[in-house]
Image (cartoon, rainbow, N blue to C red):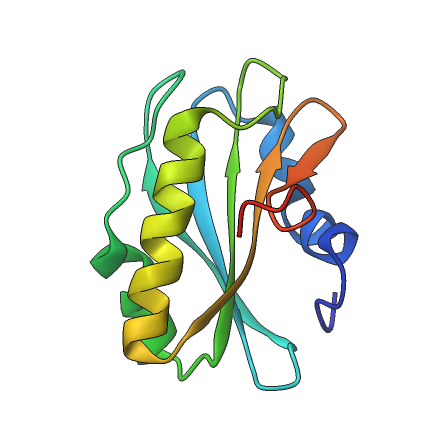
Amino acid sequence: MDSVRTPNDAYECVQDMRFLDREHFRVLLLTTKHRVIRIETVTIGTLNSSPVHPREVFRPAIKHGACAVVLAHNHPSGDPEPSSQDRQLTQRLVEAGRLIGIEVLDHIIVGDGRFVSLKERGSL
């Protein structure tokens, strides 16, 4: 995947996460033209949680000169419906990104063969 223009483009970059047995939280680092610089795994958690702190999310973005990011994590249960914690974390990361000048374009939750885009759901 060269660039991320749609939630489906982002999902294609991380769809392998549906096979993971624990929650993983990744960040797609993007240029100003939304080309993928790299994809970083920020944390690996348990069956149903993966603790995430803004500094871990934005450290690789700053290091690699990303202008924007797409957040992604998986639900090993296979159900990609966002929890209230997912929505709260997303808002926290959007605010942190705003403070440092790195836009959070979307948060993709990967399930079993399907995904949810929090941007499409209006939670961004």
